[in-house]
Image 1: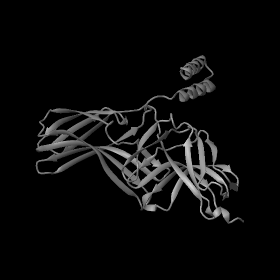
Image 2: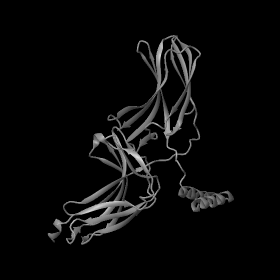
Image 3: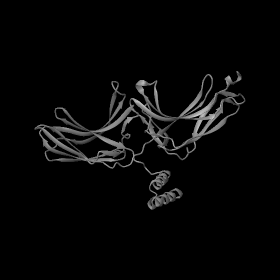
Image 4: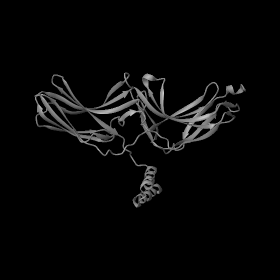
Amino acid sequence: MSFFSFGQSADIDVVLNDAETRKKAEHKTEDGKKDKYFLFYDGETVSGKVNVTLKNPGKRLEHQGIKIEFVGQIELYYDRGNHHEFVSLVKDLARPGEMTQSQTFDFEFTHVEKPYESYTGQNVKLRYFLRATVIRRLNDISKEMDIVVHTLSTYPELNSSIKMEVGIEDCLHIEFEYNKSKYHLKDVIVGKIYFLLVRIKIKHMEIDIIKRETTGTGPSVYHENDTIAKYEIMDGAPVRGESIPIRLFLAGYDLTPTMRDINKKFSVRYYLNLVLIDEEERRYFKQQEITLWRKGDVVRKSMSHQAAIASQRFEGSAASESALEQAAKEESG
């Protein structure tokens, strides 16, 4: 065993192959700030290079192997020691040996499954990252690189409107209606509020968007409610028979898709909360869950081509052949 390699160390750098062209997305960090990360979708290949640069040229670096991992994990803040990995892929880049000069290693994780959206919340974090490691006997050298994953949805087939009533016997009767129950993140909530009976003096009325994050199971369930938006409907007393229109634009708010029972660890749900305040400062609430989903900005060409191939495979029809031709034109154009 050589003792000369103890004085050697190295820097690791992970570079994506399409770093110059790949889109970046803003994502909130644990301290509430926003940073930009490379954006990926489910099924996309993750490939690049690992650069291992020796700090002391001329000295050799002994190692027990060099590897890169692609990891998707959930971390619950009240259980910091445990990371729940739902994706864990490993590629060996070099066998045990020694390095006498800086080296670059290529890697590729093909068509990686990324089932959930990246998320940083009050009590939980879901993240994806690449981790390159030079394995050593005493202390490993490693470098992590976070990426962001967005989950895209298609337009929901069933999207019924929401109708609700708020009533206090012989005092108040209000009906409110929203145009649908499922909204994409850049959507507009359109609705109307009808005052059928008003015998209490209402001085203020608003709609709030509430985000409810639920973590844990059984007795150790934590709920965190966060008011994302407040939309004032009126300031002053309504009269019987009056109707008030609502237009609430979602694009300006920090929203995520609805996330239900993610890996049996957490959920994120959204609610429209109608709030009425009377002149004696009494508050009346009515809450309704809505579903939020992320719509793709642009259908990526490779996806349209894959979809056409899939339709041809299953249908074998002339229509699917023309779809394949159209996708090929898009690719070349």
